[in-house]
Image (tube, rainbow, N blue to C red; front, side, top):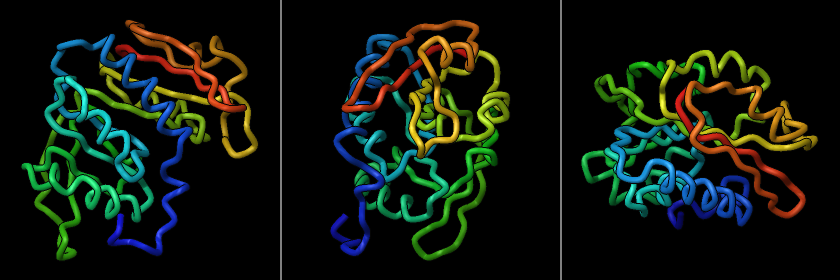
Length: 202
């Protein structure tokens, strides 16, 4: 972070995010236990706070791909997680639109420090996390891209002028994202905001 003193990180991480992520991870640990999760895709992962918190648990994670459409996030995330980046890409950030991801078997290319593009390699996301589904105007189109039975964690919000698709209730959120196997549904209130979460298999 100190390498980018002119960047305002308040839009990427705040106390509210930390509380929501902690709630999410506590329930992930309870639901998944010692199950092998493989490669985890954090959609809209920002500067990597979520990834750092995930790697600080006993969850059986092979590696984390921190995907965000904001190019600034990649550099901040990789800087913050430099040790994990150097550990055979245990953590690696990438600038990528969530609609360009192949959630069945993704063809990943990474911009390297010298500006060149890495050789593309294929990997299967074992778990997809999206904590920003309320920011999507076309949630249904994105959800349809996820393969059936893929492990997923989704978080949406109640009404707010800054989000495209607020949810009126926990039931409305649950109905929007049908799963073949629901392992957790819950609600948390942080300040004046209400968040809904589902964990399970699509």
